[in-house]
Length: 636
Image: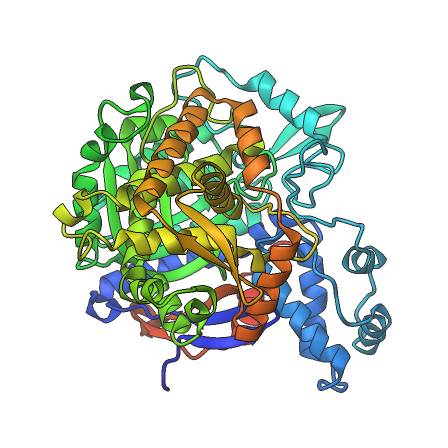
């Protein structure tokens, strides 16, 4: 079978494949280790679906019954619209868009669905029908609109329906010990509920909420222990299993520290309740699973960055009060993804920096990764799509982007993940949650600004990370173009920017345009808008100034300043420019979103004993989604 990075296309989504390059050079024991970890990374799939919305799992079961059992005209407009809807639901792990968070609108009729359900003898649940077709019910998965009750207007399932934003904030304010120098991540692994007129936390653990799925995860993690590369990995797995059984966040911190300090061996993983983007209050974490191994050659560049972490910290343009006196435990590498699961699937980050606990990062450091085979797949899929030719005005800039953009994109990701997130420090007694719903946007802006500032530094040439002193300009141009213009294609007409990473990019680009207008401008030619950068050095000065302010906001926990910065520069959409971007993008026929079909890690047994595993790439998107529901669907 000929391998192709580009696969199925539907709606605004292009499915890609990625190669697990280098798997063949690993040992049979490492293959077995990856197989068990991969099964654990897939076993928690239903947890994320339920976290995203309490109706997601019954809706998925109903839609998959129609897909597999309907015997009518599968070429009809209604059925084809149904297929698109189902594929979007699969991709988003629920009925809301994975990025914009708005609920999908079915383009097949309610009457058609009712008729089909009757034909296949599937019980009709009126509540599910209402949730699907009434646009006013659970309209957004995560609402970030200022001056609205963020919990009552969000469909995510981290809080019982009767819990208001004020109730949740009052509850956590009452239990958080602000004087604790090593605070647990309160509420990370629980659903807030009301029982006997009292607010309680229903904890995710074996024997608790999501216990069936977590038991299956633990089953595979237990098997992985015997195939681990070293004792340190075995200790990490045992502590993770302990955490899954108890739900104790002190145990989670112990696991996190062990995971951070486990740097021997090629294979690594994440498995658990990790990122808080799906909670409008930024407290509760979605479940994700991920298996990877080190790309030793590509990791040479991240090693150079991590070895010089203190230099970058010392030379940062931020106030000395906010700098770390000692950068500890900076571990950075380029990795090869073997399996994506939970909130990293099908849409995945291309770089990750963990942990998210502020005191652990400050005391023990962080692990940072750039996922090399995913970024490579993106680049292969983008070849020949004419995007740059459409949006770049002059030939000189176009030639610069073609020469430098790919290499600078990777370096920007390295700087963002390896050093940006790990830089700086909070002032004493500042809560990590002080910025509330703006915290994620400010943190991503901080890491991006750090990367933008340093990618232009001569230190990059000294470390042999760029070919010459002009390479960084390509990253500045592509970043500003995206933040000011082209990322708007991911927004539906009439909507504002809500996703944290998009807000971050818009914030940076629009703030610089407003305060450093002499460095760049938007110009009109032939009824189209283009970005023109006049002074890259001046633009870098602006990046340094904004980095200093964003770090101050983070370090001091200045919620008022964060609110003003994000709301003024990161949220609003120019309607006319938005319409233009949608028009021009449509002519290119490029899907604004990309996601991945996992390769299949296939076990090899001999006399009933697992002896090895291989990688297979042939499974289609629909086949994979149906298999995952069948093999890993364990929550009612």
